[in-house]
Image 1 (tube, helix red, strand yellow):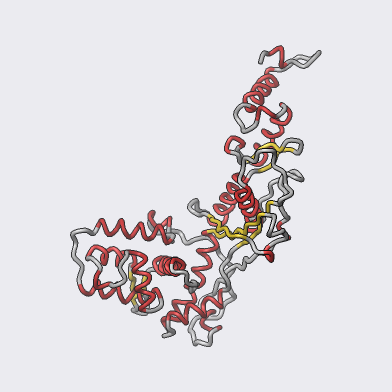
Image 2 (cartoon, rainbow, N blue to C red; image 1 turned 60 degrees about the vertical axis):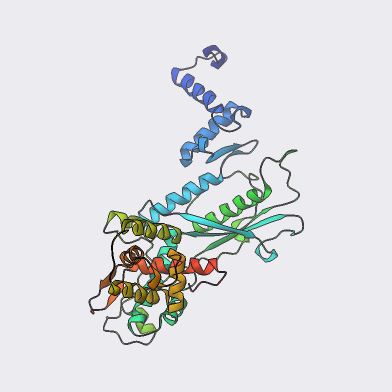
Length: 380
């Protein structure tokens, strides 16, 4: 492209305009399907990308022919990640989706013709807050002598249901995506459902989309389960359950989704996910190879696993999932030392020895995962 071809008839082109037009011309060959766009369309996309801070080269936004610039699913994911970082003040949070075939009660579609996927979204910020709220009720109950399973059940009822967001993505049989479809319809339905779920979880995100750029339902047409966990003032949960407490009555604290400031750098990633916990324990096992544990340490592992999992059978289930062996007596010395280091029992002000709160939270999540692996319902 020459400078003459960039000139406007009867007018001079400034150096700035010339550089701008060169940039637009180059951008056409750098974005997906850019060569099919007119220069003014590429220019509009560039302006949209700057205004929304989305990257067209990473398909976070693109130009919908005949409609205008629009965000892609990658753009929604980026904005969701930024929103979680804003909420928590940390950069290690994440969200994830689970997909299943939708039922007729989940949306409006023809099950014999259309493809409908139900998307369930969770994120580490609200999951951490929810599990911490449950622990804040469970631990005092256990100290009062309430059995662990009953304490978990009561705490679960007080705190409320797990915070999840659901949406149904539908691809109708009447939709036409060209003579040769380049994208699987089930995957398209998944992405539509994910976008709707993200819009519900992160209502502060405002990305302008041209009408008709996505033939899916509005978010208001779909159900959502998104109860925020309750945060309890000192002594409040115990008073609600009828226990005496010396703590002065206070108003309930607002929900706080910011995770506590970690004392050590390695704690920045905690609580570990069940998969990460299993991997972490194996790393610690390898580091303890050749070292010997005492019978007291072995007994401590058994007692604390039973307490954390809510029963002896549950403790075996958790142990089996973590290291592949359900009996503490059959663990290697390295495994005992690794699990003991993870549990990290600490002495409380009342002279009781309680596992670290991170470990309790991770144990609950790992136990839930072990139940799911067996096709059983989670305690939490």
